[in-house]
Image 1 (cartoon, rainbow, N blue to C red):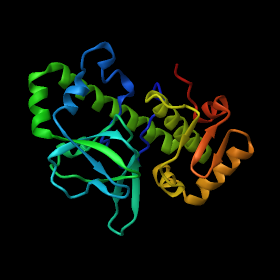
Image 2: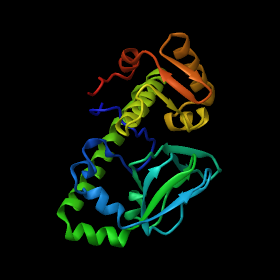
Image 3: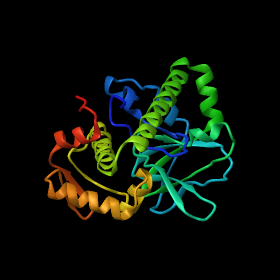
Amino acid sequence: MHAHVSPMLSNNRQSSTLSPFSGAYSTREYGRSGPLDEIVALGRARMVTEGTAIHRAGDAFRSVFYIKSGAAKRVLIQEDGREQILGFPMPGDIVAIEAISAGTHSTTVVALDICAIVEIPFEALEALAAERPDVARFLYQRMSAALREEHSWLAALGLFNADERLATFLLDLSQRFSARGFSAQRFMLRMTRAEIGSFLGLTLETVSRVFSRFQKLGLLNVTRREIELLDMDALYKLAHTRPTH
């Protein structure tokens, strides 16, 4: 697996989430701005209410979207109306990059709670990248990292059983929350168990059974959507990965 537990488990999916974990994406703590700050400054901030689409499949591609706060789900809607969850963008992520080649969005990104986003016109981003090698390098690095994570999740989907997939998913959330300054062991699940199942290629019933089994084994405690990870070592063993420090 990747150096951290990959946030993307995909099934015939292209990555459109640029995750910040492969390196510093802002240097404001050192008194100056980094490439991501310059990118975000190009955009216009707005709020998106729960259940509202940030962008929809079929829309013309004009912008990418930076998630400032809140959580979202990226969805591929099948011809028969069924939904396949492709990912869960979080604060610090940039979504919609995959639409560059086609010129239209192939997926829909929907807010799971109130989201603050910044809509960044792609023409302005492209012009900035042409002028600023550090910005272009930042974008290339993030796209490369997203592809590596895609490959890791594809391997997990093909090789891991239900317990291993859910352990990997929970550890990924843990590390994503930790990277944003929140607790690595106690956090809120904004997505439903059905949405987790869609993302992991599991049925709702299977996800519920695995959660119950993990709780009985003392690996975690679940109260409604609040989850506390109690035995991180056991979860890491299930996920076939090592903790990062």
